[in-house]
View 1: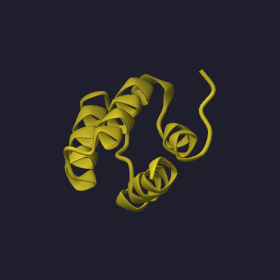
View 2: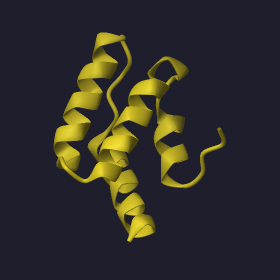
View 3: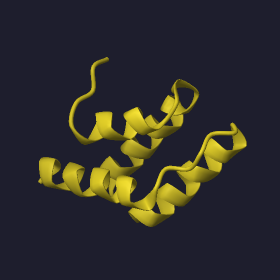
View 4: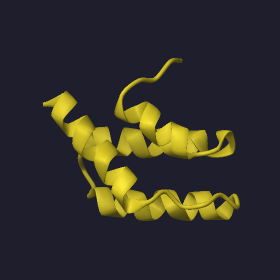
Length: 72
């Protein structure tokens, strides 16, 4: 699967071992039932459990905003 735009931006920032968690976060953003801050918190918890550095809030917010514009 070839991702482009904001989805690729997030996956570029996460090592391959965390791609499943990043894709989970993108799905949660699409559902629009939780805040992006809540999703980011859980994403970073999942990544930390795997020994992966957290995603920065600014990066995640950029992805969330670009996705919301694209989906509008």
